[in-house]
Length: 110
Length: 121
Image (tube, rainbow over all chains, first blue to last red; front, top):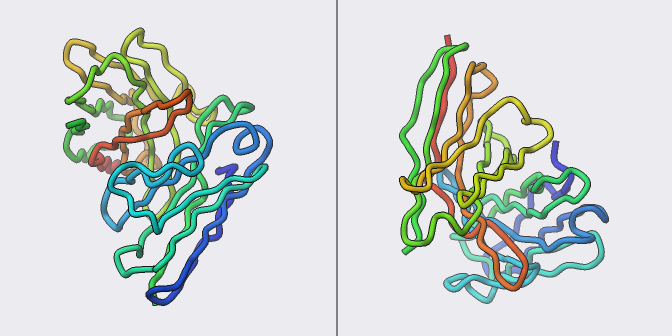
């Protein structure tokens, strides 16, 4: 069972902005950094955002991350067909002494 | 270039044992933790545990402690995930991932391609 809650789905038309939330608690997001991962169909996850809001090289700047209190968000601006994918947040949980992933959000480009 | 290459798909019967691997290259294998992540069919990512190849320290998800063994071979630059007695519920895709750290914070920066494990009688 995941302790980080995400909406199951999100959608938008090309060019729109989509935001995905990740809700946790004081033992995970509230006290540790958040990372985000993209999983295209049939492929391994890929790091999109680390340390709450940092992008690895090669990740376009229309993707951005933020964190406030016990929640985090991933925003995708200028939505493109290639953004159609599953997205997961992740953080260390001090109470569980384990890394935890969010429940995952499927983004659909209409 | 950092790469993690996992062993191929496996089909096993309940009760059988299994060991899958994850070979790292392009970096000092002993300096980064390697984690294992399970993805059951149609489900999300589930963190299983992690090993530091430098000193073999391991940590496990509370829900999976005792169900699997995580090990590593420094000279072979390979991490392993092992079961002594598989169950049908172990059917899943298993990913290894490197824990990269920057400025005191860590995240999974490189992932293996995944190993599909199917357990069926």
